[in-house]
Structure formats: structure tokens, C-alpha cells
Image (tube, rainbow, N blue to C red; front, side):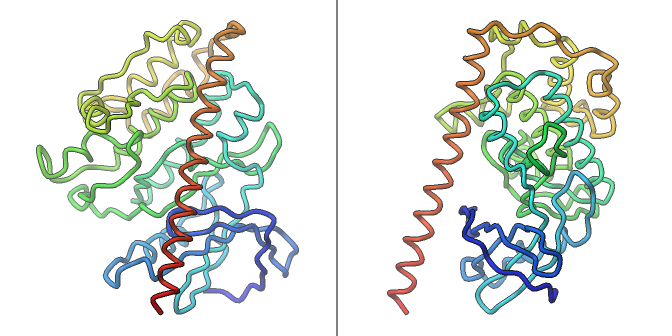
Length: 319
């Protein structure tokens, strides 16, 4: 809770699950903020995920993590006020620029890893790392990467506590899919698998496991069945490929930890990124892939918004 005075702005807002995110203004210092308006009525009385999200955000402070400013609670709503990542979504920036080099990908992943290392050191696992949850501090080329959306994050006292099936299908780690079958728990290593998927997409424009059939998708994830046969990978350095391969490892004992990843020669810049530019034809292919991914994400957001409006309409008529 806090007493900072702010007002909602209609400059920008979008639906995010059971929440709407607004751009607002802090009247004390005249700075813009992000305000996540969450409808508490969609949560069951025993669901503590919202309280946990707020608590985790209040306990973490890192340059690569969106900063919590304060929280307002009303009988039906929770307003989570955070710093505004004025640069918007990384994926949107990439689509707007029309180009994204291997060196750019390394800079982004390095910053994501720094944020993840901070979280893991403080016994926090994010569990929903994905391209859509990576924001930028501002619109400059030197913008800082910000990890956002801690709705599925949680503290872990030990590995045995992590057993909830959650995450986004394209980014979910195989050990999460195996809960209830071949395993009962998983570890914070799930975040590192997701980082591997993000890196794969940033380098090639494709997801390593994408498939319209969810059962086929999950089967490929469980077996770690992905390919670098795409011709775009001919223009990606051996170091970047090795980094992907050491992250997308089904056996968690062999998967790089966040500390190991930060010491990887490609991440450190000891191994040069590929300096060869993509041929114009392949550059257009990569741009089209990333644009399709961005448009699909926007379509999902719009569907969520319409579903929310429909649900709210039904609720209001029943009262």
C-alpha cells in the first residue's frame, strides 16, 4: 500500500489476463508510471497468486527487473503501480526497426540473465519468461532490458516446493510437462530453458518447438526435438549455437545454470558474434517471422480483452 497520488491516463492500455495495464502519472514527481489494474473477483478466495506477485515485486530491486512503486487495494480491484518501461515491448521494437543482429540478441540475453541471476540468488523463480515479458526502459538504442509480469513467480525454499504446472506452451520446460507422470517436482532451471527458447527466437525468428498441435508441441519439448537446419543458422556464430544447445537441454543436470550461462564465452563476448550480414532475402524471412509472432501476440491480447468484456457484461447483468 502507499499514498502516492496518481491518475489513470487513457493514452495507452491493454488487457493482460485478468488485468488491464494503463499508463498513468505520478502527481508527486510528474513522472509516468505503469498501472496494472487487476480484477480480484476473478480469483478464488484460496488463490494467493496475486498477493504473492505483489510481495515478490516488493522484495526485488534490480536494473533488469521492472520496479514496483506501490500498490492500492480496493474491495474489488488491486492496482499495482510500477515504473513505466517507456520503450515498450522488445518484440515490438524489433518489428518496428526491421532488423535485429546477433550482437543485439547477445546484449538482450546478457541482461535477461543478469535479472534471472538476481532472482535465483534471492530464491525467486519467474516461471513465465518469454519474449512478450521483456520490456525496454526507453526508446533509445541503449535501452535497458526489463523483465516483467511476475504473476507466476514464487519464492522457493528448496527444489521440492516447485510442482505447479504453469507457463506459456512455447516456452515451458519439459520437466514441468512431466509433473504427475515421470516426476513430481522441478527446479528453477525451468527459467533457463525459457531463456534458451527466447534466444533461439531472437536469432532465427522461429520458435524451436512451434507446432499448431499442442500434443505434438509438448512431445517435441519433452524430447528436446528442435533443429538448426534452417538456412538462417548458416549466418549465426558457433558460439551462439553452442549457447542455445546448452540451454535447451532436457536433462536439468546438464542444462546451464544462470551463473554458468553468464560465463559462457559468447555471452561474455570472448567469442565474436557473426559479423556476416544476412542476405536481403533471409533478412526479409526473419523480419516476416518476427512480425507474425508479434501480430499473433496482439491477436491473443485482443481475444483476452473481448473475453474479459463479455465476462464483465454477464457479471453486471447477473447482479
